Length: 257
Image (cartoon, rainbow, N blue to C red; front, side, top):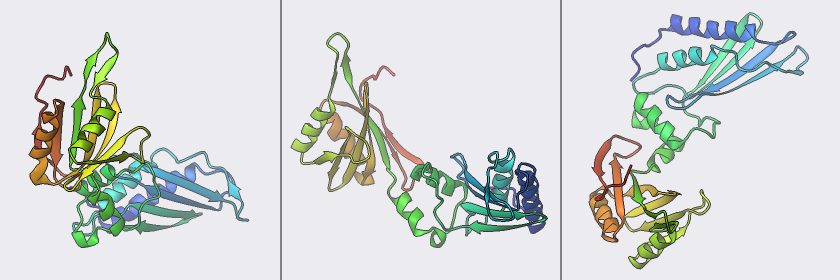
């Protein structure tokens, strides 16, 4: 949790510094600059800068000036409130000799690179009371996997084969009563589901990774089931919403890793 709150005077001083840094990098003839800046603690920031002249014509800026990220992060951390959390996006408008700032505590940032895992880590660092978690964020967090695992493949270098194949995994789980379908997010990958688990795969040459949501009381059952097929499976299980590691199930055989 942040430990360096900024009082109103310090907030104003930081905002003034942002204006100074912005102004120093603006093109000649500028009349108004608008900075939009979003950030999460474990992701890079996303920022845009729009600049116009006195007639409203767009001017080309050199980019986001160096130092803006540090100042905005200082401000974001310093404005944290125990129940409300802190803002996701800052909208900073600068005209000669004056600035204004709007802080968005509840809207979803326009940043496709921010993943549900990033949001979960941000909420752990900047906790909010449940009533102040917006619905869009709640949906992202509630959809996070609580199980991550892998089927370690038996590789025969001479034959150029690896077992089990993803197709064999699908056939075996289907025979055990699981539903199987292509995963819409990743070409060539599969999604599996049953009454108490939903899993998706992400494969590489030596490992079929999987992640999803599994009823916690059935974690051990899933591990036993998958290894019972003769596969070499390890799993890590977590608290909801990207929380702490709760339990690990190591693969029963050496993986060579």
